[in-house]
Length: 512
Image 1 (cartoon, rainbow, N blue to C red):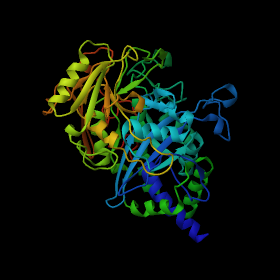
Image 2: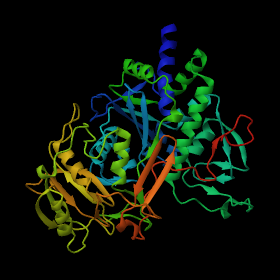
Image 3: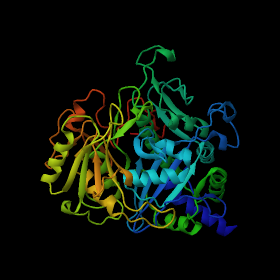
Image 4: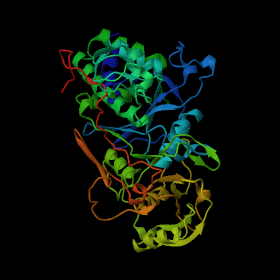
């Protein structure tokens, strides 16, 4: 019993730190394990993929407020997709959230979709999509559900949050009637972090919810509130401590039944992480969101299908954010950290996939002037009225087990660094022209990334200062002129005036 309590204490120390709101691990012989393909061996750093599943049918106790499996609410999506980047030697922890509606080439086995849809085909498909389309190697996988989240908050005795405005979300059930400090149990805490259809009572306005305006950022707003919840949860854990055996066992019992990790996430490795990160505070860790632009047309069309509301990856801000999380620069591989190949060694073909006359030639000329080996241009049928630019690469596919090494991915990253707009990587050998290492299939609002310092003005950049980080997200000129698209989202968004935050000690105001 003494060893078990000690192991629980050590494991929860790091796992509470890393994921605050219920993303916890436990002993390898008790936690649920699942086969996840494509995982890479960790080096000096490692990336843990944390997923919040919407699978209602997997819940042991059904709740009407969550949606009932028996009534057809049986979708399996990743409501939360977060990567925790760990550097044990330095104690560095960085969190990166990927918006659930980001549209990428390899989300599904059969092709493009929103990234949250990948989990429907299993964790291996989600890992594959992140690795291939973002170039981020994943070392471990952790999945939790609604029950895990709620039970962990309850095991901590709930948390307190200050609500500066009355707010309401019919979808999640959140209903805050008045300004004040509220004690949230697990059920109501889940309502806060699930809210992405929030309505806000205007100052001095009616108490009738139907008259309240709705915020327009959906999942991006939910992510910023989740990040704040992580900070509040981290402070709650720090204040309580987790060395008390009764508290530790209560937390462990809340986590174990509903938590799933990959087959290789062992007890010993969890304890090793706990030891390495025992002194790090979640409140000091950068919590970033991959920047995107919102499709404002009201329904994204791709190859004849309507995918509803989507967001698109934006470059160069997306790559810059990933590099910041991984601690590398633009000339290093996100996969290995090694130097990317020189432009002269990269054979590039350009396929005009936008329908804009002359676009392939323009891009080819620009890349040739930067030293790339351009082998030809062509035309392809646009995928829809607002096509993304995809930097396709080939080479051997990622294996189900064992490490993947891809010179083609490195070449694609070298090319993508030159592009600005809605641009994303995509592994697809059949989309790469013969003789090319990389084929750029151009899309809407594509420009060449500047090599000079970007001058800041009203929409040229978005600069956010947030604790330990400052992140600048460029707004490419073509995107800024396109009224179908929003400006790029910030990677560390400040809280809105209505967002909940920590209560002060007296419980009569926010903790400033």
